[in-house]
Image (cartoon, rainbow, N blue to C red):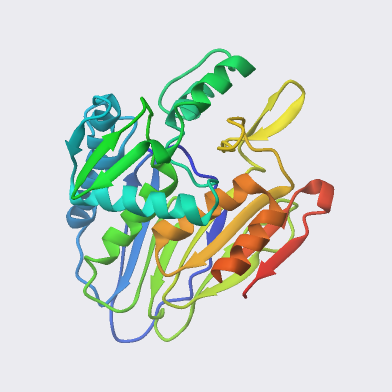
Amino acid sequence: MLRALLIFIFLLLSACGGDQPTRTITGSTMGTTYMVKSIGGDISKQQIELVFDRVNQIFSTWDVNSELSSLNRGPINQWINVSADLFFVLTQSQELYQQTQGYFDPGIGNLIDMWGFGAVKVEHKPSRAQVLSALEKSSILSVTLKDGKVKKTKDININLSAIAKGFGVDEIAKLLHTQNYLIEIGGEVLTSGNNHGKDWTLGIERPNGAESIAIVLKNQAIATSGNYRNYFVWKGERYMHIIDPKSGLPAKNDLASVSVLHAQTMMADAYATAMMAMGSQKAIALAKRLDLSAILILNQQADFKVVKINL
């Protein structure tokens, strides 16, 4: 369903112990894998995958029958009724657009498809003229939201890949009848409580092979976006598989990865993507302005320097 977000997180889970049983459920969803580890919980794999199916049916850009795909095909300048979940995520997306000064913009689906980063396969990269033309139809500001309805004022293509996976993690958390759990989908992680009295501890991989950066999560989520494993070369330059909404081009800056901690996985997911698109200087300023906890790893030219903010 979702484009592969560049998550580089290793789970360093403590050994099990204590009186309450630990239940671990794994599987595949959204083009990646998932794991739900609960202590004393009674959730079933069927319950989990019903949630994932619902999320896919709403947000998938790979499924032509999803609600989002239907909205993207829908008429311009007409109100369209949408589900509460889609309306909620679109509302949050517009707020994130404002907070990140336009660097989080799920209205760039036309550009994502043009560059071959989405469900549409392309044989040739676009010309500058094609990019500029697509930019005219690539902004979440061309969506009006009111009373559970959506109106597109331009023929835009909405792509919620940078927030929907995190939303799915948060939805799974609502099912868990326990205070102690860890949920992970493709590297997006949400924790609650502890692991038999020990902190949930994760490690963020470094691109130069150095020791992972240990992170303790206390009732928090973490999402990581990066470019050092998934990139492409265009006209002799190396670019990310993340679009810069300002230029319409794949982002090219001084960052190798960004990890963001937040109470909600969907928010961590979105902020990490936006920061990765904007580069370290603006990302640091954003984290400080919004009081976000983040870890930036700069690129090889900056010797993979690690910058920690509010940690």
